[in-house]
Image 1 (cartoon, one colour):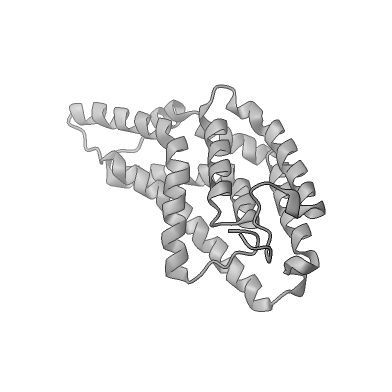
Image 2: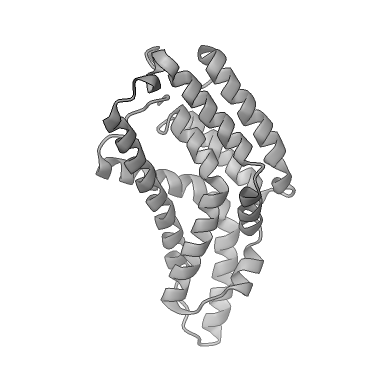
Length: 221
């Protein structure tokens, strides 16, 4: 629930992570899914081979599941080294705060801008890159998932830093993702999100016990 949360066994984490990503990311991907489904129905009406939208959606979730696997392996690799500075009583709060601030700075990078622009343009992506058949749906799901990971991986770092199993931070991150991808002018939220995350990172480093919704290790629930 808080920084340094143990991720549990590999099967447990993959199951929980995949469920989390489906719940957090599919709402923001709904415009893309609706456009894909519309084009698929049009293709089907013309008797062209078209897979169900579920294949595209499932492939999209698989991309996020693969990202979780990489994060899990990185976590286990670091955990095996037993770095003392990551302990909360040592420099742990500075590491967590720094990770949150770094995620905020990523919001201003060109890569974030490109990936967010893709995620906010479902019609352009589907019409401009339509691929027929099941393989085409998988390829499009992989491509869209990769852009989505590029857009949101910094926000996932925030989730890992503050508590990967925390319902509070899951909701906060999901709402930020939804606002950036779906709301009119959501692309202009990058600067406010940067300011908020950098400020939050500094707050965590200086006075973590005062941060609302943060379960400080060793403090109980």
